[in-house]
Length: 297
Image (tube, rainbow, N blue to C red; front, top):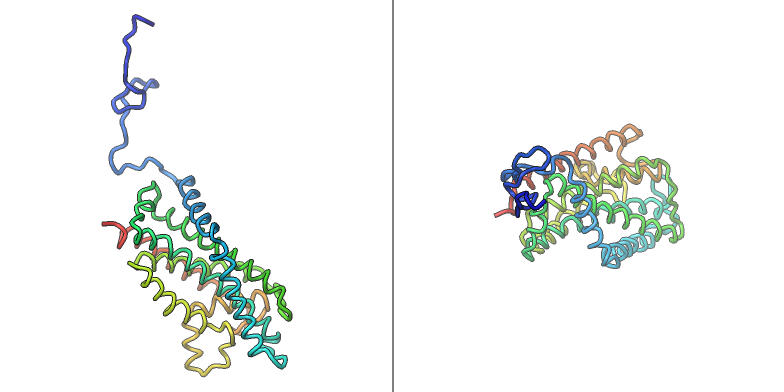
């Protein structure tokens, strides 16, 4: 109407009147949360960003690791599997295949989660991770989820390749163990990779963790042998290695046997232990992220 005052205020501007009750609108005060529940849109966006990042170079991130791990099977089968050698009642190729699959999954979960933060710190784009309205938990879940996705894809590629190798039998005896130890091992290494990327200041630091921590723990975890063949002192050392329980538990899922213990209950206890280790690691990474150590300021 022409006789009504004309207002140039935007309806959502600070100080504008709310047409519902006539009160003035206000923006939330600094630090007051706007999203009161899980930011599913932001979480999904970051997850898809990370998945697309490694999937664009899938030749390097999925197929190359699968081929490299496959070479271990070829080399060790030819070198140690001659003469019909059997381990845990199966031929050597069938024995070593599950360990190589989960080892490849874990190493690639670490590689994926340890790259993004570190690349952001080196390139000066870390703000792209810290500025969006994501809590530390949401940020961690998205990064870990993407790393586990890559691990699963590498594992599937390895299974497909090993099925073509003569003498390998990948029949599944306990599906729950395959799923649990595969995912739990990938989550553990993804968390370790995220923690490593927070600590590292250059790619050399991250490479040092890979070469002097991840690789030795993987190769000395019973992937290519049963620890019963070791001296008692080395058996004790092996049982202190969390990778041993992950790899042996994953192998148990295929073969129905493992060197963790003589009973299935021992494997179940190992599954619970790995789950508790993942939970403790997740709490540690969350607290480090919330503190902003080496990320803010």
